[in-house]
Image (cartoon, rainbow, N blue to C red; front, side):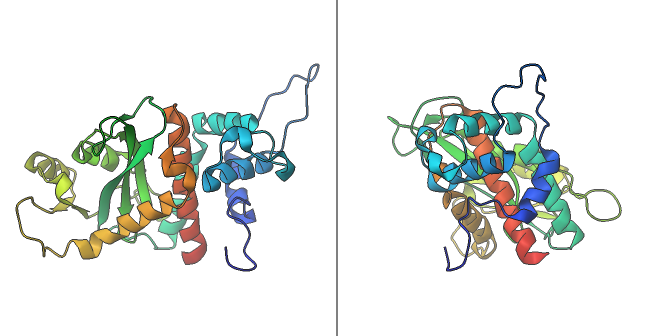
Length: 273
């Protein structure tokens, strides 16, 4: 952190103003209200503290006032099931679209492998060490590196299997008059996505494929465009909870992954809008 900056787990006012209307309202029995509920904003700070530091839930410091680790875990699960992070991501993309800051001329796709500390759904043998499980983060960005869609698979799943699902996962982005935008003009990818069947499928969606071919010498100059997705993946892994998959449950890790997508997108909103 630079001098004068707040820690990344402190929720800014601008971000909270966008999140608060999306949160589900808790139902309490007036006859048996129980203990007072910890404010959602403080719990979100606790979730972000775990995301950025990688600390285990049970070791979340109580003196921070964010509640217990189990409280934060339950609230993360509740909000993820309610689709809060997905709706927040669509809201932030709409703001960027209204300001004309989304580059739809091209999209870039890539993936990264992370070690899984525990076996569970969407984990598989690591391609570099079959004795250890791993998972993959698949990321699709627009031309400047703003994430449009992310997904989680086992470490043994081939990258090209997520090409079409990620394209279909791009939400319809509103913000301007006319139909919402959902498809880029072109798609850039490395040799891991080299397959004529998928090129044909991408063209069928109205997208021009620019995929490097195997066996061809380097020098296609696609790397001068594809680097933005590698930078975005580095932003994801700057949040320590995403460097290693500690969760056995895939939905909790996906909740962290989607929340990180919202954080990265919000940073672009603050900088560009």
